[in-house]
Length: 157
Image (tube, rainbow, N blue to C red; front, side, top):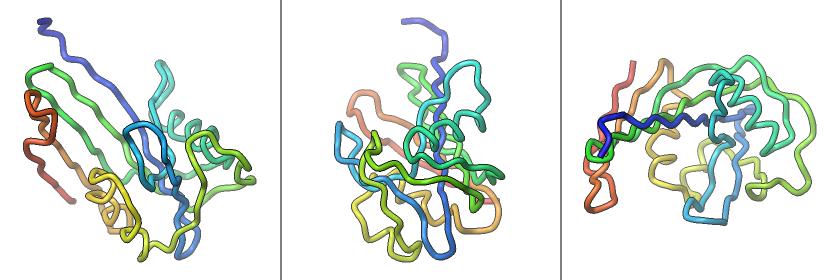
């Protein structure tokens, strides 16, 4: 096994319009549920450029003035992997929603009702933190043998 650490970088961007946020009703592969737009950052684009591109690809919207909200990461000490998800919030967007979005149906949901929808645990865990002052850092340590979370910690500043 190599001693080199494997890094992967993703983004998430919550789009807020008053009391509503835009979510994707994703129903394919192993990552089902309501999720905000986002995805993998392509090398060598910046993390913010990746967030803007992913929103455009998945929703059709152009976003700007992204506010950094926090980092969500998985670390796997056995496989030496670190997967980092940079989380943003924006209220500044323009354009028309895609009619046939690639990741799933686009839905405007009331912020205070969103947690009642089916979501992956990782999305539920950080969802409220998008709407609080300050930033967050969540680190999940992955249990390689059991292929599940071993522990997590949340820091909020």
